[in-house]
Length: 353
Image 1 (cartoon, one colour):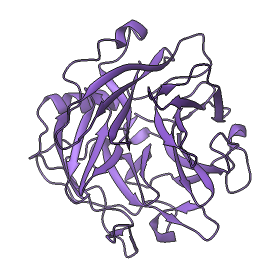
Image 2 (image 1 turned 90 degrees about the vertical axis):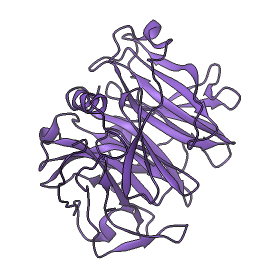
Image 3 (image 1 turned 45 degrees about the horizontal axis):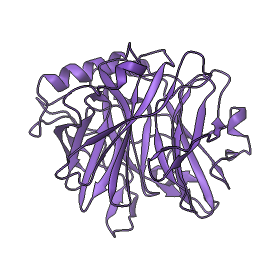
């Protein structure tokens, strides 16, 4: 149930020619605290981003020393950065809408939503969402490539779908490899909440007869965008709650919980089951950056998401933050300094914003 008004704006901007030479406002400035990644690079709390930052639902990954972000848009938009800070648009995954999609979702939007990108066994797997705003007649598709620097995308078609007769919604995919090497797909938006299903490693699609597990829900049903990572004996489930896609009026927030098993149950820091509305607040934004959500993680070191810039007409903007972990194994941001983002920036002319 996502991505209508602001995504339409992004689509128009994309078509009008946002390219690798575009420049937009910086989404964050360095704070005094920093963290060293596994590669030895020291990163600030809020990465000082520049360039083409317009995005919804950023999926972050890396090939060699080059960073990539895949986001909601016509054909799935793609951004690239050599340092994680300065970003440029480099095109899209699909030049035409996937031919299989209309059979399952006849009233789909032109935008393809909420992609997820993972490298596994020598291949990049890109899961993506086909839907229309407010509908659970939806589908998740899959495309693959061996390289991101010189991609040759092969669309593998339908992975899983939902219809109006289902009590769940098949969008917002997230591929997870558990500690035993089993493959899973987390997904879900509104309706009965977040789900998980086991995949067949040969097809990267659900196993025949696989159980659909429930991970999290809320009384308001406003929960989506599951993303799961493993760290030190726990699986951590991040999710977005409340309302996206309303510019500065968006109430999106990022929450999390953790479980000893990938199938749950997931509990927040207060011990509340996420199936009972639990979820510890990770980021609710601040006076400038409204409605953070649509998150993805780079391992357990950084989190990428969009937020709406109150100083730039509510534009959905890429943000990347260093992820910290306390002594109890719980994630937090800003080096423990503040409960909301300390991001700031200055605007420049031109570009996509």
